[in-house]
Length: 138
Length: 481
Image 1 (tube, chains in turn blue, yellow):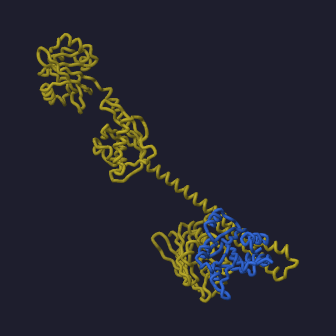
Image 2 (cartoon, rainbow over the protein chains, first blue to last red):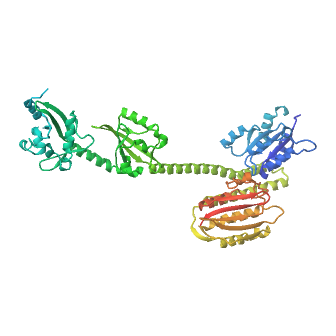
């Protein structure tokens, strides 16, 4: 029996994208819980807030780049200042429509960003990511 | 040792220049045929006459004195070093000469033999050279081996601000800026050791020093000129300030072009990204519907269709916004715009939003400005709409529009009591497609303020914001009077 991820966190300002990605993530059945948050600041609050005595520590975070207020580039900077028990063993994957060559170089400088995935999220794409980063889970 | 007069006479006759021998009293003792030709006197009219008959009237009085001092210490030398010498013909005409003096001992005592060369042609050549230098369009400065200025033209006076008299005899370094002065004599000596026609300071930027202390960029050509006084160097100096300015202007323009190209590239990237986003949403939901519609709950189908419809509307808004944005400054017919009338019209157009949001507008007396009316209207309207849109949840929007006249422009400010903008976001709100809020919080294309900035820039003004989070914002823009 596969061991599912505890939680997938989607951070995207687009309600439509969140709706679709949540649908895909739920249908793929790789996580117990899928949480979609539109504003990066709310996502940080979510990570910092204990629920039933524990931080959520989502196994997988999908982060959009072009977001109002705080971009996907600024998010990891703040994210990395969180206590490690709030970060957990989380893998941050940037989810973007167009990959600017500058963006890729910038992402490599950020230790939290582990990989890229093109929008829209697909069932196959999500399964590949889980296999790659959580080989013991599948 | 004495000299045989016959032998002496034979030697004089063979000489190609005029030779005159005088005795201690200054009387002419011997002349050759060249002397007769040069001065126009037959020999018999010269012999026994004082040598002063060959001297122009104006120098005649001083001549016996010079003569006396030569006889006092007779050594072979040139006459009148440093002075221009002239001789007089029988017909009273003058001509420039160069004279060599040689004491000659004879049985009858010491005589002086003068060799007189007519240098009219050389003087004419020199004069021609001087005229050429004088009429040159560049500053021309000639220096000797000691670096002393021996010749300048009037362009030099104009270029460096010194009258000629203040330059002649001075060190050339006076025209070199202080910071280069130390190295200059070294360069100068190197040049005198390798005399070739070339430009000065290959690869270096050269500057001249004006009398008023200012510096100007120059280009300098060097030409060695060999003369009887030794080698001289003629420098041709061109003030290239204008060229440098033109080069700078060209550089500025190409920098500006590169900047605007980079902006355009970024714009294309952002525009394609923001335009693709709703399109991708449509495609994604259509895919979902195609794949799953037969087993989907009607609620999910409805949601998908709502997203598709919203995305299409958004796409249309983006395209309209981009089109308007790209038109700024293109069809701007400049007219006098009465801002009071304009703001009244905007208030009428927005009456629905204003009453719905319970906003109050307090508009002070506004100026008349020159500009493109539809653009100025779009500018002010966008700012008013923003002031209403970004209101706090619990306070009715209150907007105040004021104008203030500065020296050369009007500043118009639109104050609101809305949510305000955090300092870290204030500089990017005018960039296109920059949004601070999700579409769910505040609807928008991210074009509005970029559009405002483009309009203000097209009118030669500036736009900025003062804002405090939770207290409100004041958008200011300036337009020339």
